[in-house]
Each structure stands twice: as structure tokens, then as C-alpha cells.
Image (cartoon, rainbow, N blue to C red; front, side, top):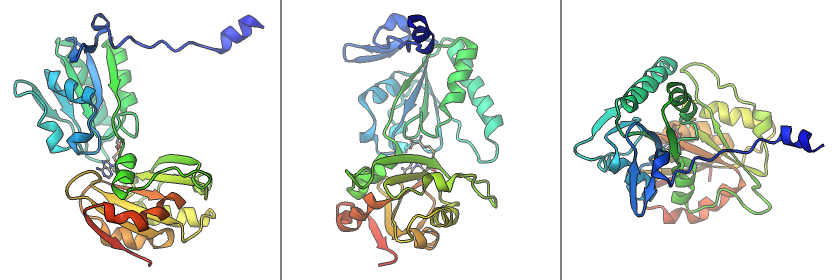
Length: 288
Ligand code: SAH
């Protein structure tokens, strides 16, 4: 019995990130990165004040920073003037090749003894392709650590002044990507997502907004389910729009500009209509 349990459970081994002999970490108030180490760092949604202290310290301590296109300009200003700054923003449709290249660039820099920061928008572990880069580091025998960040859905909810979960009404919070190559339909299990007691945070959903709306309604979610679209969450040019599920395609078409946007769906968003005044930005309404 005992050995059966022993076989079924594997203890997670946490690296002691506080110990500099183990590769990287915080020593007193100083953040340090040992040469030859890679940190995947969450840059948050764009507002530099939403960076963690740890992220800010790691960015400042890096010899080289590889960053995504979505990382805010003000965050990039924290990179040391002596450090190299490399944009590895990906063009859609060329992901896998680019991902391999990024993995190689990052591991080559670490192998050359640099302190490497790989800066990713939001939280690296949410639709951030962190896994591919962790694997690349593991294969190359390079120590790799993660510093979490504020994800876009959290920033959008904060801008709207609402909670993503709601006792008794929104018991589940789901992050889903509806990324589609232009002209195709996202492969999403709408039936599994059409839960009236859940909040859905749709990332990369701009182009897919009509599919999101049609898919969820066909799967049984009420057409008047509240929806909030937030573009450029946390940034000065942010835009918030509150609508309902059946009007989402129309709203998305008229509202979206060039920035990244997250779509929040569910009863928890009903509160956004009454609290939108806290968001000092252009707000419009559809369906009222
Ligand atoms: N790792 C990121 C998500 C990367 S996927 C995170 O945790 O936030 C990129 C998608 O994130 C964008 O298409 C958009 O849906 C969302 N996103 C990122 N930054 C955003 C922002 N400032 N405002 C709204 N949505 C954002």
C-alpha cells in the first residue's frame, strides 16, 4: 500500500531561487542573475507600475533582454543602457520556425555566459509559449527560472472595476485562446465553455469574435450574457466597451483598433456597466 502511494506521488522539486549558488535569485534587496542563466519574466499588461519588483530588478540586471512585440515601451525603458535589447516579436503564421529560432538565440546567449532575460507580455505561463522556451533551455542544459506577471484579463477587470469571479454567480474562470489564422474557424469546445456560472477570458479573440459569439450561443449560453472588450488594458490608450454576447461581433467590428484586446464574458461583467466610470478612458455602449 505504502509503496503504491509512493509510486503514485512524485514530490515537486522546487529550485531554491533565493540561493545565488543555485543560479539566480534575490540577495537582500538586490536581484541578481548568475551569468549563464535564463529568466522568463512576465512584463505585465503594459503599465510599468504593474511589473512586480522582482521583474523590474531582473530586467535591470540583465546583460541581454529578448522581448516580445507586446511588451510596453515604458517597461523596455528599464533595460540597462549597457545591455543588449533584442525584439523577437513573432509574425502570425510563422510561429514554430520563429519559436525554434528564439530558443536558439536565448540558449546561445546563456551559453556565452550572459545574464539573460526573456521578457513576455502579461504572465509568461498564459498563452506565452513559455513551455517551448523552457524545453529549449532544459535541452541545452541551461538553468531557467520564471517570474510571473499580471495577465491581461486581470488588468482588464481592474480597468473595468469588476471582479472576475463572483460568489454564487461566477464560480469558474477560464482562460481561452481563440486565435485563428485569417479565414479559418477556431477549434474551440464551445459546449465545454458555455457555462452561465463562469467567466470566460478570451485571449487573441479579435478576429474570432463572431465565432465566439455564435459558438457560445449555439452551445446554450444566453444571448444577453454581458461581455466586456478591453483593448490596451492598463495603458493610456485603453478602450473599454460593454455589450452583450449576441452583439459582440458588431461591437468588436466597430470598436477595435490596433492594440491587443481581451474579451471577458459572463455575469460577473454585468457589474461593469454600472462601474465603468472608474475607467478614465473612452467607453461606449452597445445593445443598451
Ligand atoms: N501572456 C499574455 C498573453 C499573451 S497572448 C498575458 O498573460 O496577458 C496575447 C493576447 O493577450 C492578446 O491577443 C490579447 O488578447 C491579450 N493581451 C495582452 N496584453 C493586453 C492588453 N494590454 N490589453 C488587452 N489584452 C491584452
